[in-house]
Length: 169
View (spheres, rainbow, N blue to C red):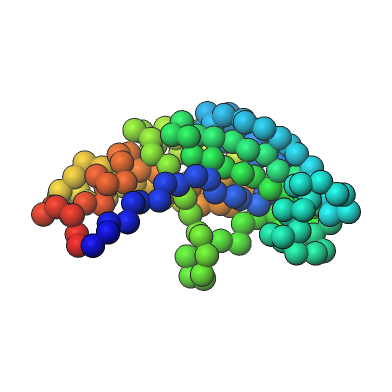
């Protein structure tokens, strides 16, 4: 039997109503690297980005701007601002199909939540011991200035989620 090699995570794309504010928040609050952009793409132009965008989004999107950022682990974040987007806050929800949060790792979730609030975001859940009788690992939830949910783990994903008896199969 051939074992499948795990796929690595490359990046996530997030639509925001204010690209410059997103760049500022994630570089100043999270310390992420601003790789490139803002880059503008218009539906009526003829270039490679326009060709690819038409294949992805179809017709009628008119224009968008985007920028590439990268976190300390090399995971990319693409932030998009579409010209016709009038939605000022994220519509993500755990009660409907779709991505409703991303998780970051920081050794002091309370300190990161303070930075999130200072940067225009908010606290959803103060740091909690996830398994108070088993592990000293903290988890917390915040939101960026656009309402995108950010979960925060104090330790790695594996440490937070492995059962007391080892991996859950």
